[in-house]
Amino acid sequence: MRKIVLLLAVVAFVACDNDWVNDVKPRVYIESFEAEFEAGNSGDFEYGYETDEFKFEHFYNEEFGYWGGFVQTKKFDTDAANGLYENQYAVYSASASHGTGALLYYYDSYNEPCDIVIKGDHILTSVRLNLTTYTYASITNEDINTFARAFTDGDYLKVVFTSLKGDKEVGKVECYVVDYRDGKQLMATRWDIFDLTPLGKDYERVRVKIETTDVGEYGANTPLYIALDELSFL
Image 1: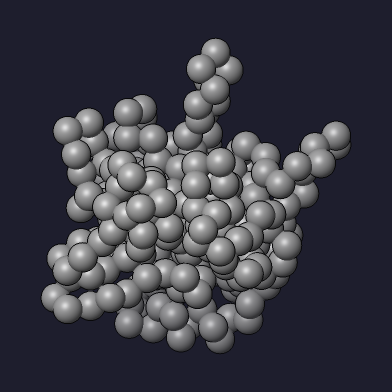
Image 2: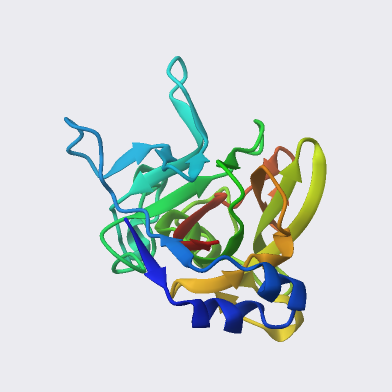
C-alpha cells in the first residue's frame, strides 16, 4: 500500500538543491510495506517483497535453512527478553510506522548483500528505520545473546545505502541507527527518518549493508538486522 504526499512536502525536502526542485516530479510516493502475504501463508513473515516500482532482493538456502535480504513482517515486540534468534523477524516497536506491516533486512556478511532494484527512473528520498527486537536486546544486554556484547562509548551500528548504476557507485548514505560516539546514546527505536537524497538521481539499484563496532574473529557479533517502513520516492 502507498499514499501520496503533496508537492509542497517535496519542495520543502529538497529546497537546498535548485536542480532537484526544477527536476522534481509532481508527486512523492510512500511505500508502506503492507503485510499482504501470499495465499496460504498464515504466519508472521514472508521472504522478499516486490512492487511495480521496486524489487527487494533476498535469498534462501533450503539445504541449510539460512537466508539473507528482505522479508515482510507483521511481528512487533518491545519485550527485550524476547530478543533471541528465534524471534529474529520481530521489530522492536509496538507497531509499524504506518499500516500493518514493515520490511525487515538481514545482512548476511558471509554472502553478497541484497539490493533494492529500481524498476524505472525513481529516486529514493527518505526511509524510516527501527531496530529489531533481536538486535536491540543484543546491544543492550550482553547476557541474553552471549556472542554479542552490550554497546559502550564509541560503539555504533550503521546501515549503509549505496546507489549503483552498473558497477559504478553513484552515491552513499550512512544511517547511524545506534550511535554511542562522542558521548551520544542514540538508538532508532521510534521509526526515525533518514534522508536518502544523497544517493543521487540516476541509478539502477541500491545496495544495503550493515556495519557494527562489535566485531570478532569471525566477523560481526551484533545481529545485523534493521526494519524499514515508509520508503518515500519520486
